[in-house]
Length: 222
Picture 1 (cartoon, rainbow, N blue to C red):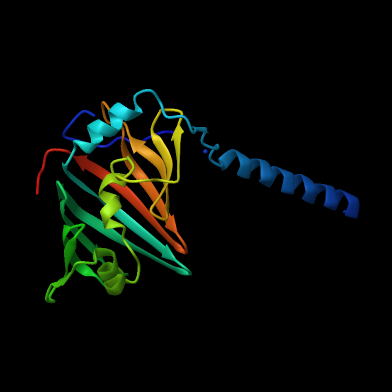
Picture 2 (picture 1 turned 180 degrees about the vertical axis):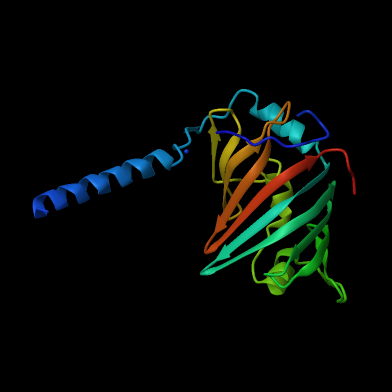
């Protein structure tokens, strides 16, 4: 899997018979071209790489970070997108700033901890709830797994049990099933010493969330 480069503050694809033959050849050519363009399947393994335990511990210690990028949401026949202008994390406290004319969000801030959040749309009074996922679902129509996402976004499982886990040939987490979500890490930034996720796809029921992280900053606290 190729990972895109990014800037970070820490170095871490006639006759009827002849006509039919021609159509058959054309169809075969199209199939070959499509096969040539298709991405090769990712080779995975269930056995954790030798450095996985150390990698998890190290990434759990990364509690102050900032990312920016995009969020895509697909639910039933509806597809939406938003810009993640800034997501700042300090320990369990986060400040997420989104904007999207599609969602009707305008400039929106989600601030708080996994225990309670403030949801603020531009020009409106903040709304508070001790049920973060429920409030987000009420406001935008889809769920955001805040409690687990602050770990998943770093490429590690959240604390607690998980149902399945797979790794790619580079030793990075590729697929994880946890808390009712299926998470696939499609690409990573080549940061050192551990790669950090670039594209993450989360699925649950009829919801698909796609995070594209364009930039990691491991030094800017909240």
